[in-house]
Amino acid sequence: MSRKNEMYRALLGKPTVTLAGNIFDPLSARIAQIAGYDLLVLSGSVGKASNLAAPDIVISTLPDVQDQIRRITRNTDIPIMVDAEDGFGNAVNVWRCVRELEAAGVSGIEIEDNVVPRQFGVEDPGLNPVATQVGKLKAAVAARTDPTTVIIARTATWRADREHALERIKAYAATGAEAFMLTGVKSKADIEASHKAAPDIPITILGPPPGVKDDAKFCSDNNVKIIMLGNPTYLVAVKSIYDTLKFLKDGGDAAQLKGKEADHELTRRIIRTDEFEKWQKEYMR
Image (cartoon, rainbow, N blue to C red):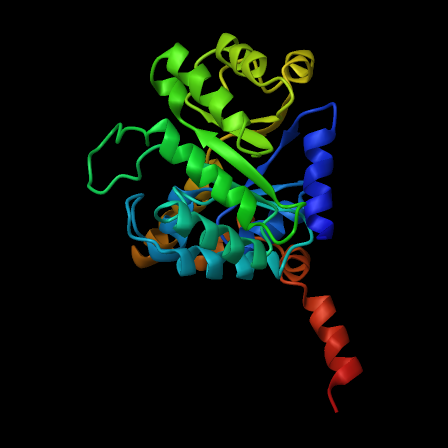
């Protein structure tokens, strides 16, 4: 039984909602932990961008994600939930995906029901058939070696019609998945309907509608436990890196960046310099 899994399950059981820290590599994960977040989340699009400098199409593989997660979990003490795409294939591939990500230290594994885009410019790639997705989720649940690992049924169904969304939510609730990830919800009414369709299953939301994040009573009443606000951390970091490199390339003076840089103490804390120096003194001869 994993301590991080227990921490993750505790968040799903809290009466209050948790804001997850959207991170993209070990460094951002360490910063999120130091900033006081209780949960990390790695999205598929940012995982590809940060690890491969590639867009969000089928180009990453399970080993790519597994390696990236290992480097994050080795350097943090808080749980992480991961967008595992469509499980990298059919239901049997999902079984392997769960085994590998579980071994890498993931506490919450999202299996999504939209068809992973295979070409650029596809705004809505469509959804897997309900029966196919039910099989994938059942395979994911059966694959766990640690029963405290949480399988999350991720659905983009709210981009389609309401009745179909509720049909899928009810079907997914019967698979053994222990949380929902909702994407594309447009209103509080969408969330309320999802909760009524499966009242016992915690809800996590990517990109909540206006007014949800700060409405504690609404979140409590509708079993909303975790909220993610997209990937502003990654986007701000990309712009900062680009602006800094271009400023220096264009002849800017590095001295002019003083005040915008991380200070010495923060940097040491993030990369755990004190810990490594302690190990040197204790073990190196």
